[in-house]
Length: 186
Length: 217
Image (cartoon, rainbow over all chains, first blue to last red; front, side, top):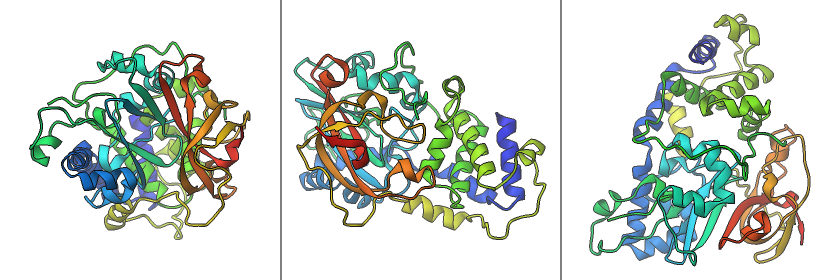
């Protein structure tokens, strides 16, 4: 595969179809600059600021953009609030659709066949396997990103974090928690 | 199309394998394959739905045996050939065999940055009436197009309720086949686990579906 990609790049550069510096820029952007710390800041702000949280749940695209996170694969956002009664989780059974501006490029396992196959059919079993044990009375809502909407889970704020700064809160939030396959622990 | 990409509900795939401290890319060629896909896409010879169709429209054995960026590479090779950016001979030779097309201009670093930041919403700002409204019962059509679709097999023929009307969006089924955006409402439709899988488990699945996929229940 390395040779095929090299050939493709050579041809594309030779023909003036791509600027090699622009390719470097794309790699650098998604490898170094855009990642789950962005989403963690959104979550922390929602925990700390009730007005921002209400905005996020009403118009996630605008609320997230106000923190500077916009662009490809995050054009139209929806935020889903996890509560003691309702647990949301996100999958893309058809491909790999997760919100890049807040989560970065998804890890391989989010896009892997086992997760895509099972998240919709056996979410409780999947969560259990991933270490999230939910009581039977907790309703599970699985969101299959089949269109251009991108979903961000707002996890439950852990107990014992009252009065924490946004920065300290953000450090607790994992990418997995923002697709609803992990809980946030203090 | 009823392809191997439509994985919801498939059995036998084994456990979910997570990697500790996973890097963004696992090899240099993955970095380049990712960037080439985005950069060549910016030339505007195809849209995102065509890109997805070219990754999915392949032998199921090949689809399942290919890694993620292998699929991106294979899809991009065929797209570029079909849309006239380069030829199979050029890919084989690893160099250009014909002169540049002056109408195709590569995006420079600044334009690339802007494109990343701006994105490209598939939402259409047109007042098109919605066929359904919140809370209404709907049934997904039992249809099996051999062309591109975002209607997973596990919900075809199943009844659900409109949960959110997301507004008007480009319709991927026609857009991917070069037949125009056919804008229409896209909804989050809620299905109970009971309806989809025959057992409850106190769960439901929300699927984003367009007007053309749905009929009144």
